[in-house]
Length: 280
Image 1 (cartoon, helix red, strand yellow):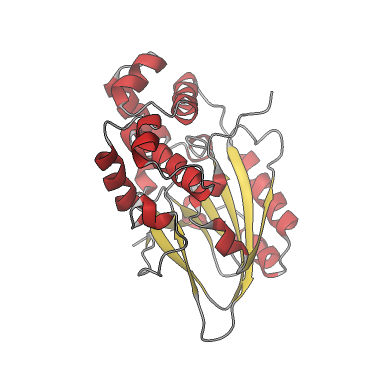
Image 2: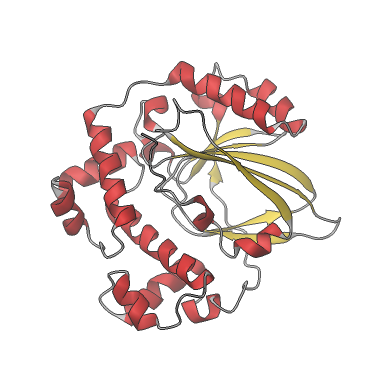
């Protein structure tokens, strides 16, 4: 059975229609044997005129990624705040987006160790063919990059244990139950104690369950606003499990940089670039 996609990759990007006018975007499916761990390969290619740039807001997701360009191959730990990526010049970038908890079978170390960090792949996996991958990226060879990355991942894959399966099931619950808003609710539905959930999420996901729940709810809100489904914020807040409208609006503003009413009117003005720090 195909693994259900609970990462909803399009919701990582605010105002995706505007981005599609600036760059070419595409997605590739992972091979069947890696699909339980990988959500998608995303590809972006752009050619911005000299002296110009485009700032794209990005929502945080509970997913580790490997970011590949002709210049670098890096592991991007979970970014815990919304940030702005600047597109300029000509570039090809391919991202390997893992499912929540999907990076652990390849890393075999607490995923929280890289949360908020950008780490060269070679510093984690010395055997990775980084130069060959970068060369394929320089040739804009998406499928060649994917083939090299998948070979590397297969060499490192360790079978997932029962604990990781419990975490994956908890993520499924969060993703498919929009009204779930607390760790206590998740504990009841997953049959795991709150402290156990905290410990497992720290090790296998990289962030706590409360963070994951809040991000899924706010991404759901952003998607509904993008689709023009609602301008009744009290109703939307209620459907997403918020106690009241003001709580929902405050959290949405913290994530997207503006209240939902302003967000629904179109792409906001560019904000200062904030990206994960490089490894020291």
